[in-house]
Image 1: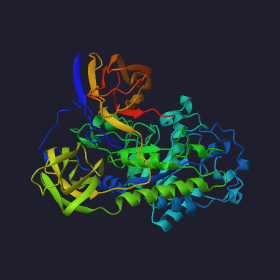
Image 2 (image 1 turned 90 degrees about the vertical axis):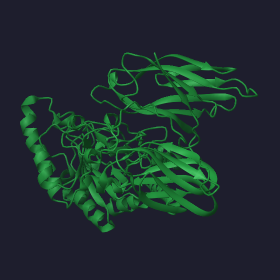
Image 3 (image 1 turned 30 degrees about the horizontal axis):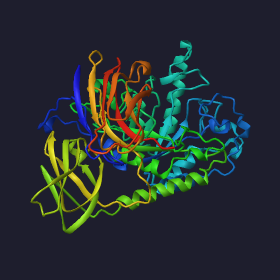
Image 4 (image 1 turned 180 degrees about the vertical axis):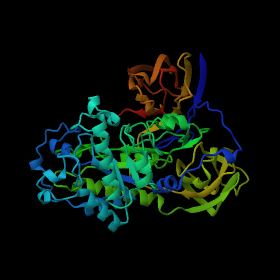
Amino acid sequence: MKKIEILCVCTLFLCAASCKLFAQTVSEGKSGNIPLPSPAQLHWQQKERMMFVHFDPSTWLGQEGDNLSSPLEKMYLSALKTDQWCEVARSWGAKTILFVAKHGGGFCWWQTQTSEYGIRNIPWKDGKGDVLKDLSESCRKYGLELGIYICATNGTWGAKDGGTTEDPAKQEAYNRMYRQQLTEVLTRYGAICEVWFDGSCHIPIDDLLREHAPDAVVFQSPSATLRWVGNEDGIAPDPNWYTLSSKDLATGVATAVHSDLNGDAYAPVEADVPLLKHGGHKWFWAPNTDHLLSTGEELMSLYYKSVGRGSMLLLNSTPDTSGLIPASHVARYKSFGEEIAARFDRPLKHASGSGEVIEIAFPELTDVNHVILQENLSKGQRVIEYAIEGSADGGSTWKKLYGGSSVGHKKIDHFPTIAVNSVRVRFVRSKATPDIVNFAVYNVQSKLKDMDEAVIGNWDASTFDTAEWKELTFDLSPHVTQAGQYEIKFQILARDVSDYSRAGLEFKDWKLEMSNGAVEQTDGYTFRITRSQQTPGEDKTILKIAVRQKPLITSGDILIRRITY
């Protein structure tokens, strides 16, 4: 059995020295072999935040899936105003709206003759309205870009994931119909910046994308230039590599688990998540669901773990049956945007440059607790490992504040507040000379309480073996500091989606080395530590667990939190 010892010194909101369990071999110093983003990918990554809009007959049913039972005559859209959607998007800094023009049920929000199941058969504007047209005009008015979700699944045709019809005799006709729909949404409403094929697309459409959306990025399908992160929690892995093998990308369903820092293809990940996520998970509006609104703390945690890990945050919105985003939701988006701005709009100081070290000096001792790093991605993702260090004596001695791996478009690092007069980033390993467009230092102050979980480790596709068990040893002493109960969770963030049941981890032989304590497995991926009393002195808390990979690969975070009631 292989063994890995993990000395965890993580604190609070983000891991101050996150424990990496990766085993990939890195090709260093070969700038000519670094995959580069296309202009469309580069532009897309610079936007950071996008707003999803889920709106279809499921909204009137109050459920997540459209079972085709909603009476179309009830869809009045009495207050629909796409300008309001754009105002909401801008309030939290989103640069793009990704509109679900057609979900899996098949309802179409634009004027089309390809289906009777659509906007021309509802009372709104006597069947002559076009939500996609209105939204495209609103986006231009508010300086936003427009992306289109047009699902290949279609309940009215019996087409399943990817657009494969249950009745093979219908496939050719369905392909023609879907290609017509895609052509309509790509040619009638101005530039489309992103095309979303949820669950991939098995219908031949590459020629249409090349002809009608050459500057768009593509989510899933064999034409994909983006990847799904692999979860609907809005969390990207750390590290977050933008490269993978072209073979994996061509499957159309690659996720973050397929990331390979030596890969020959470039495809960043997108992290989608509902706003209605607090104790639930809803993509469509339903009555009496305000209790599911993500809290300010939860939204900031998402921001740190998506944008702050170099991913796109795709945060959902849910117009109600009137066509408006509810006022309670509007207020939550606004406060979210204000919190991001309050934290990060005004750095104490910032710099840029290339080379192994970049340093920022202050004229006097200054409190700092955050650093943001951003690479020049036009030259590719180069940084493999780095350290943030601080000095209180003008650079004579340095203290490590944070150790990280990937940077990419943006990496936000958080550590305990410390007074320094110099902060530097030192690049330990890289594929080529690091080119940093932003190295910014902050002293973030917030009324929001940090989330009560800490990342104590993470794993990727190469960490565990399917045959041999690997023993992990966690020193949890910095976290288990008082009597009570603590939860350790192996949180899967991405997996091979070809067969969910065969992707995951297995555990055995867990044991706890601690006076007056016990450990138990509470579900497949969660362990609970009970510390029955406070023990004086230098009592350590050591957890050991043997882990191996199921047949299909996963990646994720290992978290600890104190259980409160």
